[in-house]
Length: 357
Image (tube, rainbow, N blue to C red):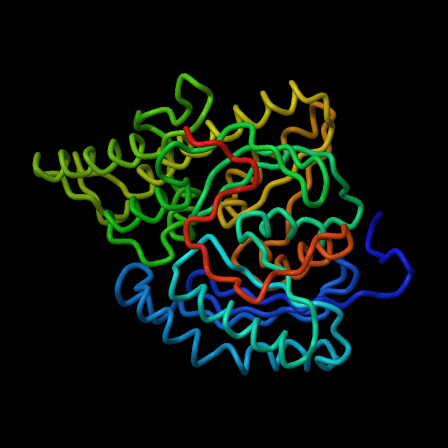
């Protein structure tokens, strides 16, 4: 089934996302066609602090959510009466931020009589692929790489996911941000590291991220890079952009390229291993780190081995309401029950079926 309800009627889902520092809303038709995608970003606010400040994020969500949802409906040229269901992120994320979206969605659902579906933010990232890649259908392997989680998954069906391996500590996106902050790069760190890595050479040796049990560990890589930078500084070297470096100094571009290679190569290695074991021929990527240029290039190389590679549009790699609406459509049309009136935020929500390490 692609993009149609059982009765053949178009189904419109309003998606609401507020798990971190973006207030987002979108209307998606039949799980595949994005009619609007409104994102109120707080990047400029949090850039002053070098990262997201939860209390500030929550207050800004309160101020932005009503107008964001109204604009999403307006741009889609629909009213709430045309909407068949509402989908909202209820975890994982910052509890104060999540509560804003959940509370608003519950109130809107009760006032309009529209069913409400609770969506796992992490799984929502996978669903972003259905909007960009109309021909993508389960089963397929999906590399999930974001600031909140890192895993290789088997997408068995639209609402059924098996976690094949995952991080035992930090997420890859979190490591990107912390390394960037150590070097004084602007927030969001992943974007800055990606840009500078393209101008550098991977000349430094750091820690591999694949551990003995096939899972990932980014704590060691992050610590290795930070310790390297501190040691070089103590030895009198300057950590700076290449055009400001003298003999014996460390070019930030080379650190970014080296860190990126170690951070991404392990993901690619394990994704390919699981793809080969599965016998499947399709692979997708999801999450904010899915926008990384080196990761996208390495994944595209899979096509040389006969695999079909599906990459979401760059604007759908970051947090957005469209991915929440898309997954909400499949929750609804698969017969899942709407969320109860007691729905609450779950900041530490895991992927379905994920086992503790």
